[in-house]
Length: 316
Image 1 (cartoon, rainbow, N blue to C red):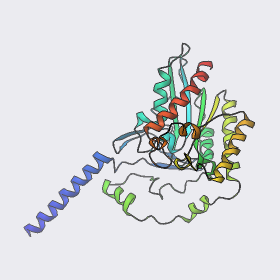
Image 2: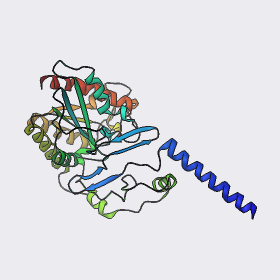
Image 3: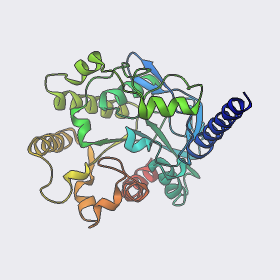
Image 4: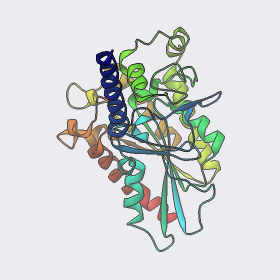
């Protein structure tokens, strides 16, 4: 009996130690949670703070990966609103201070002009958002009186499907509540087999001219910014496999050309990072994985954006 009790005690202490380690070292047990939305599809739940794999993540009252923000800026400040997906958001692999928005805030603030004393770069983004999600966010919350709105997309976003809340609470990457234990989150995220979601699969097979639909959403974002007396800047980052040889696939080349023609006809300022990344030489060093950027990649993007944004902010 004493042996059984000792075994149970040792197992219990071991599980407690593992639980504490998973929470303190990796942030398991406290994931970011999402909320479904009929128009936007889904949002990061507002007012969250966590650490994942040592990286701090803050979500403010407007579901942005930014600190708390007033709806109206101070007269002596300038604002930039970044709209994006996981590349702008930075995900679990990026500390708050290393996101593109934080890097831009620091660099633009160090280049302040006599007409303003502070620059705020707001980060409205979520994993797998496409232009239609970002348009819906902008229509819901507005541009926060930003002088410039920057939409950052990647090549895959030209083929993005319609906003949907179906992943929330059903996909392990979009939890709608905290797990009771870190051990349970590890099991759910890495060990449990996720059942197929036929409804989501149907959404992801959306037919029609997806590129044209997403270009129309970008056109509406540009029109919204102009109506609110803001400048609009469109940015696209490439997939890692598009860099070097052989380059983008045929269908991506066609979509890219449509985007270029669209920006010219709409008179939209457009920055394509495909040639910029190719010119760095060691473009693989810019990526966390096949699509997401690491700190070095974020720095390249923020430096290029700074060159485009500073004149616009000084003129505003």
